[in-house]
Length: 95
Image (cartoon, rainbow, N blue to C red; front, side, top):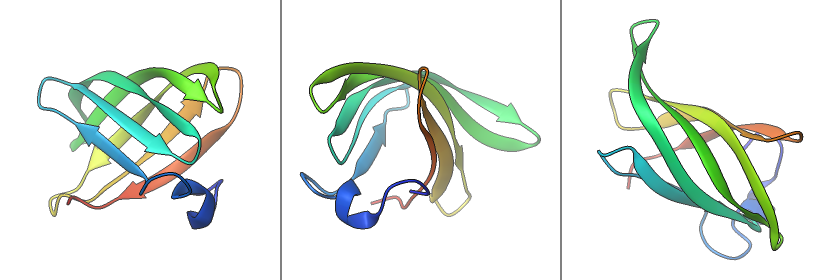
């Protein structure tokens, strides 16, 4: 992630984002976790998952939105944004 280091991102569990074909999923990095709902769309000839999320940040309610571009090799890059707060780019590999 661009805003938080690897040690923070993996402090409780290995950071992850899981998206099902139905457009629902979950994620966790550091002390932030939540559920995701979104749509798979084509943007600039790229497959993009555009989502909103809600969950918690250090036990406080949190929410926001983001996007994730899925590459041909299954890797992804995207951005997660907190409503009224931080935002960070992220990179993920398909497991």
